Structure formats: C-alpha cells, structure tokens
Figure (cartoon, rainbow, N blue to C red):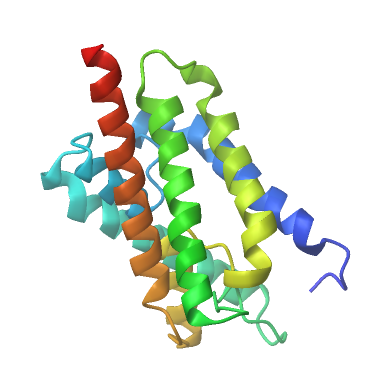
Length: 192
C-alpha cells in the first residue's frame, strides 16, 4: 500500500507500539486483554475468572472484526489482503514459530504485569517491545500473529481460512505453556 515506504521493521514497530498504547489506555479497565490466547493463558495460570472467558473472547473477536471492517471500507477497491495471516514457509515452521513467540510473549506478560516484584508501570513498554521484536523476526515467516483474534477477523472478511487453525493452536498452546511455566517458577521462588 505504501510502495515499500513502511517496510517490515515499520510494521513490526506499529504492532508493538499499538499494543503498548492500548495497555496504558485500557489496562485499568480490562487488564488490556486484546488477545484470546493471552486470556486463555491467564485462565490456565489461575489469573482470570473462567466465567469471564467467553465474554472476553467475544469482545476480542468483535473488536478485531470491527477493526478489519474499518480497514476493508478504508481500502475498498484497492488490491490488498487486509492483514490475512498466512505462512510464508511451511505450515509446521509457522506453527512452531507462533507457539514459540506466544510462549515468550506470555512469559513476559506474566513476569512484568502480574508479579509484584516487577515494575508494573513499565509493563506496557516490555510487552510492546517483545511484540515488536517478535513481529520483526517472525513476520516474514509466519505473519507473527500471536493473537487468534488478529488472524480471525481478516480471514473472516476475506473468507480466506487457509491454514487458519495454526493461528489458534500455536498461540493458545504457547501462552498456556508460558503462563504455566511462569507460575511454576513463581511457586518455586516463593517456596525458597
């Protein structure tokens, strides 16, 4: 759309900076839950009420669809995939990458946003930086989704669900593992 003026690094920075801004904007309202995989990770760690799980995921998917619809209307008639997440390499490679990036993201979130020993005011910066970094190296390979809602909405509007399962399975498995490992380490540290 920009003739190469933004580039991959620019896109990565946008990913990270928008999450950073949203953490500080809505963090006090919803905990800045914008990602169903992260919400499921918090549930797996006992840090989110199971009764709130479906309303949160419904809101996340609805927000993503609204954002994708806005882009669809803004760029109507122009050739674009509107953010559809597709693997550039093999499906297995993208699955492992999405799982790993989501694991690292959730591990970071748990470490800086939920641990009383961490500097909570800096959580948005740490989380936004991890997303930007992961988008920079993972974007060219898997699309660096790390967020099922972020992949679902463009897939829905373009009706392109090719390999879509990996953008749910990888991030959900990664965040659950990241949250569980963080809780295990917290428990061990607290016991010492």
